[in-house]
Image (cartoon, rainbow, N blue to C red):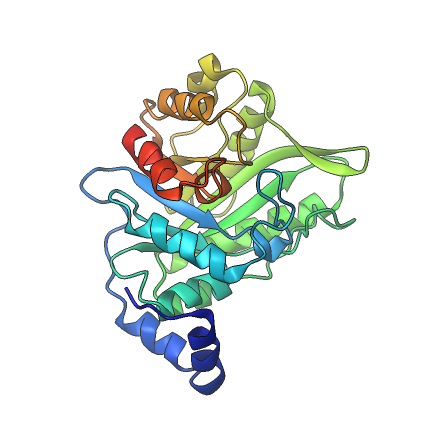
Length: 293
């Protein structure tokens, strides 16, 4: 792996912007699913939505050099298949040579800025389908928060369906992350009850003119014993999301372990929980998660 520093990256970006396209064109690719049949993807698309907090630090993800170092540690661990990120993060990793032989998934809609009045009108401000194809990425991911009291939800649903159609026309996977959401004291909260997660899965599964290339990214419901009934709402493949840094990582890993036994749960897509663990040991956290697969 290249030992490029932040100053090196900035110099390349300033003097040779075409280097990004060159790195993308020569990147060694791999199948989405390997022989194991499971995926371990590290998520790093939070900063583009203004969500920089991890654990008790409100600006944990603001230091780009530190984030890149953590990502490189995670990507080097055995069993890690790839990374999810916005264009800036993935292109930094491309220039560093960190995506060789890895799955690279572009983050598509980051317009619903954390805490904004328009947070649920989550428009597509990141990778477009043509960008994902041009950069030879392996798929795209989008966020679909559904609040029946917020008219912005309809814009996001239409954008999601359009993106699924355009990605499928290119033979590219779209990973949809659905939630039933509502505002509580002015803040958007995701409902992780069995009924809400089941409903969100049903809605997301039916979007677009085809579901052939659609995957889901779903939370483990609070009632872990009913995860099976929730995932029975779809035949689509799904990965589990990580969410905020847990104060009880052992309990989190146990919940993931139970859910991973279901046939349509095909892996994990986790960000802050692995990149910013309470003990600071990224490699250990990643290895524990990989072990669950």
